[in-house]
Image (cartoon, rainbow, N blue to C red; front, side, top):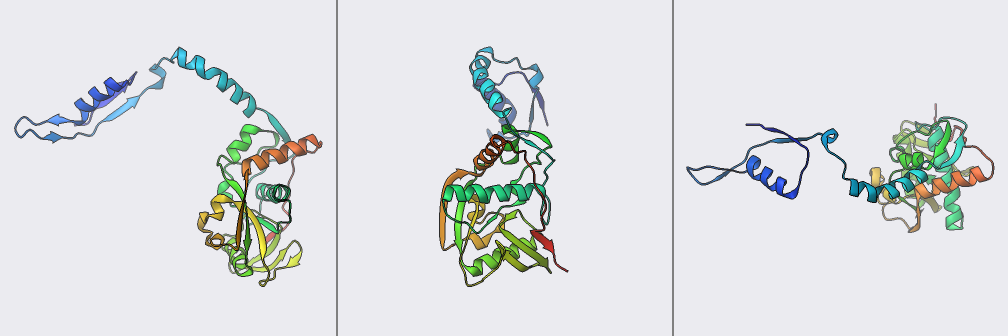
Length: 256
């Protein structure tokens, strides 16, 4: 037998009684416990707010709302992710590379992120702090990895198989799902050279099947969240009197 219950409150005592009556039934013949599946439906519209709890929460909620509604910058265009490159992917990868070198205080060759980490598009017009949290809700931190040329080549071919990812400092073609004509900061890729790449700690640990990031020659965490780097970049651009903009520049293309 399936039961449906409409609950207006749910105290520990009520929970115990409900559990006892719904899920545990005693068979008088054998003295055993039997289980029945039931469904509890909560109707929030019938639950009166706890005034004391609300009074305690409201000051914090008001402060959070104020911070989340803070306008960081004005965007001249809508920015969405896509492949092989995109306005949003290029923007975030470019600013990650730029801010990463500020934090690292040394050159970094290129940046690789993933489209899955960009959770929403950015609209034309006002970009608030809350919108950046929607874009990047994760607590991912920035990491600089030193890769061998062999590992870097695996990275480029991964990007090719994926038909494009957010990158900066790289220009490459895709042919038969392999990377061709790879340039790093305008110079041909050298498989005998070591390269420094900035990415998120999630990807650095092999997330999104990026096995080439495992066992790097060196791994250096910057202790800066990617989201914070985005907020800082937007704030700096706004202070400098610049609006947010981006472009697709052919950094990843299909080679024919």
